[in-house]
Amino acid sequence: MEERLLDLVQLAPSVGNSQPWRFVRVKSEKARDVVRTSFEQCNRKALAGFEGARAKAYAELK
Image (tube, rainbow, N blue to C red; front, side, top):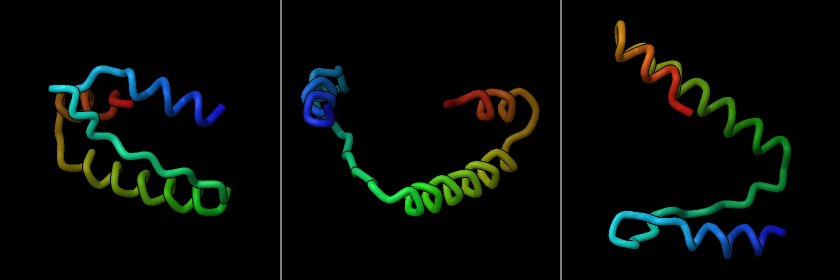
């Protein structure tokens, strides 16, 4: 399944067909938790830099 997903994602459009993405497979649940926690901390810090409508728009990004 993973190989199929990688094959499909390479068909996705990108600016100038540059395909700037990189993929990392993380098998360890503990490592995923560490990454998720780090992201959440950084995301909260970034959100604190916005106010009003910009903060709302940032908070709604996926």
